[in-house]
Amino acid sequence: MKGVYTALVTPFDSHGVLDLKAFRKILDDQIDAKVAGVIPCGTTGETPTLSVEEKQTLIQTSVEACRGTGVKVLAGTGTNDTEETVSFSKWASDQGVDGVLVVTPYYNKPSQAGLVDHFLAVAREVSCEVMLYNVPGRTGVSLSTQAICDLAEHPRITSLKEATGNVPFTSEILDCIRKTEHPIDILSGDDATFLPMLSVGAVGVVSVSSNLFPRAMVQIQKAFETGNIKEATSLHRRYFPLFRDLFIESNPVPIKFAMSVAGFCGTRVRRPLVEMGSASLEKLSMSLKECGIQIGSRA
Image 1 (cartoon, rainbow, N blue to C red):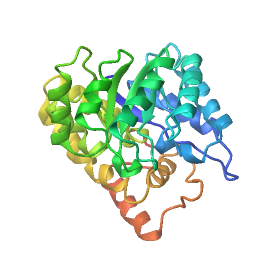
Image 2: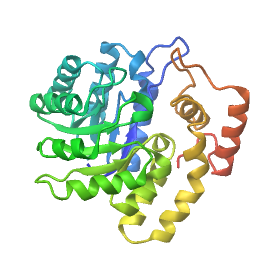
Image 3: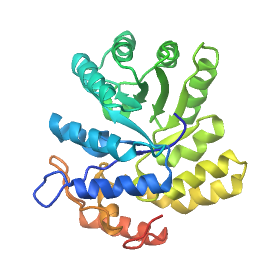
Image 4: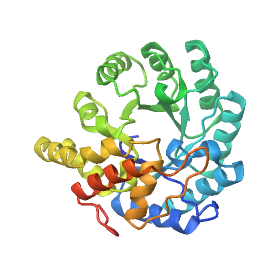
């Protein structure tokens, strides 16, 4: 699982209903930008407030749109209930997704042994790849280096979305997993650490920003891989204000505003999220302008 994977927003119409026309427009742009993959039903997709039927629709729509394009589909299937996660992951696998993104169980605060058991339960039941998702800022629990290395021994667990924002921790993981039988790919889970993590051995990013400017994110990856560090650094610096300000309020509130500016979808989010306050709107608008994002632009 290498390259740029976009954690897709879920567009809603003015009544709060899934806007599949806007969702397909976003998918078409991602395919045109040649991202490595798309991830429906992640945190950015407001999964906690989606019904099972809505999640199934988004995943099936993504699979249909990406079939034959070379763009992979990873379905966000993780919950804090192992049995529910296994069941939904198996359903997604049966739909033809390339992989499932499984977050560490939130709120329960399981032990490391419990986390390992949770992920192995999924890996045993699916026929697709499994991407671990470590995001303690959202879940209250973090995978340890040893737990990640233990999980890497399973052949279906092929990658990790590392969203601690801790680059030295990424180096620790890489040092450990290189000794395992099945080394896994590490991807940055934060846009601001995309380039820094590439520099220590990560191979991609699961990106919020690439909803808005997928081509620029793909170019950062390509520039780094071809040894053009100057170009990769220049792009990182250009878009850093948005890497920062797209999290000025809880994700995906800011990215939805930015996507509305670019003409992709509306700003509607589901409660308990609300649309941005005036101070945040002003700051994000300035960053969009600074980065050259204009209405209807495709970056």
